[in-house]
Image (cartoon, rainbow, N blue to C red; front, side, top):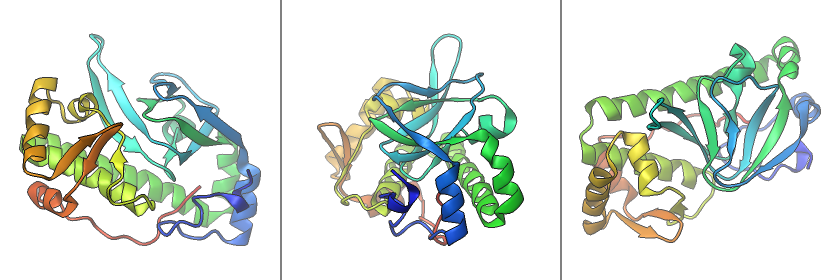
Length: 238
């Protein structure tokens, strides 16, 4: 599928391409990749000749300790760029796993030189995407360091819900995460995670459904977390 027909390019969150940018990105793209749920897309310590934009599905970034403990760093949704770290630094410092079946747009890392040299608007977009990634990690670090258990759980669910709804999903759509994913994101034991999620469910903020968690009262979760979603300009898409 060419970039002109990209199903996410015309969604409200994304800025439109200039004609020359669209032509370049279309030539920059090398194809699409289907990834099964649970498969690893990129592995920590490895290099990669490719960058990817999530076309559909969810993924998560994570690091592992030698004893098998996992820390989920954040989540990638449609429109997010993954593999940039290996593209610019040579190797991945984290791994990426498909949370759901994924479809990825594939770009060759070698094309980044031309992008930076000839397309300053797209170069700014890549920088913006990297800065946004830093912003998400800042908020996650704040949660782990200073928010209480109920606050950090509320933030995680409210923020994922907000990102999902911005992409055009129904407000009551299911977040495709398990209690283990929540535990590995927030640094909780699975027992502590279960107790915290049960409190939110009993109070009617969330409910568990087939395939994940449904946010019922997103505004209330945001208030519990002391988090206010910041509206930004239309975001870029590569």
